Length: 140
Image (cartoon, rainbow, N blue to C red; front, side, top):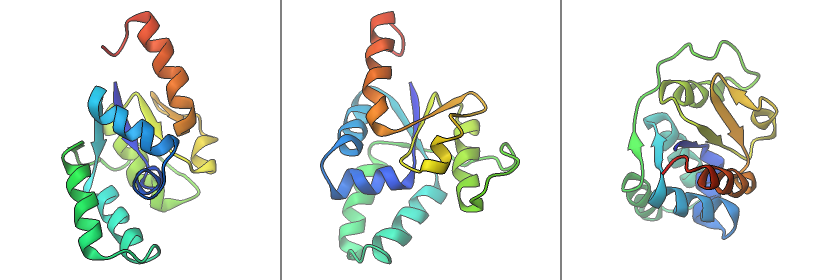
């Protein structure tokens, strides 16, 4: 299974316990996670700015993420329009990477339900999908 995690899920995975952390840790062991320099840049900007963590803290998080993901650059233009232009590079990455799922907590993106052939899901929905796929022998 190929997954892309939205920046909001990555942040949540590293600052709280719960579905985002559980899904990220599991997926890092069992599936392929794709990220991009855009996602890493957005993560760094929010981590240092809005959240106020130190650069040293960010470097530790970045090290864990880079050991868990494949970094791939998106090809622009796969997604024509979306209300939040800042999300377009991540949505384009989903299409470029041929991701099975895009894991996000963003309500506007969740309303899309899919970006081309990538299904958009909330972290809490991952486990039901994983269970069904395992029962069918998919994504082994």
